[in-house]
Length: 111
Image 1 (cartoon, helix red, strand yellow):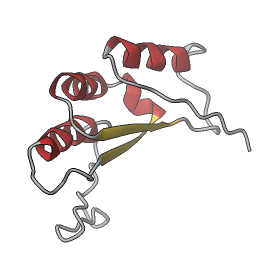
Image 2 (cartoon, rainbow, N blue to C red):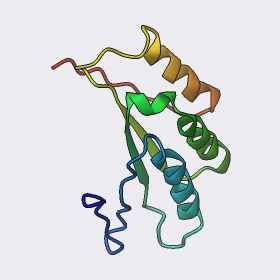
Image 3 (cartoon, helix red, strand yellow):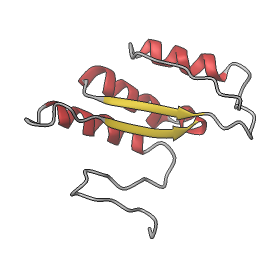
Image 4 (cartoon, helix red, strand yellow):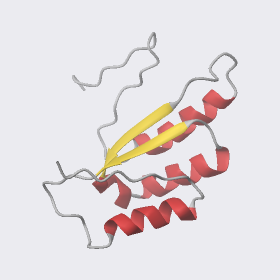
């Protein structure tokens, strides 16, 4: 794909086009970082939209991260332009994180 830039020098992986496939990849990359000497200050950050949270890869990736561990932040951005898939969507995602025993933080920004 023409816009899938990456840099081995800067430790920047390319993006994934299909929805949510980056989540298990991020969990695996974080697990790999656990065993690399000299990378103790490194962290994997995985960005996704709210639609990715309804995919199987979302749950597979969170399960991998919870079981295998590793320095990883999963950042779910909720679009303010489109309505959520259900009225209780946000509570559902937080419950999923709780089930996987992952810490969570929520930022509300209406501006």
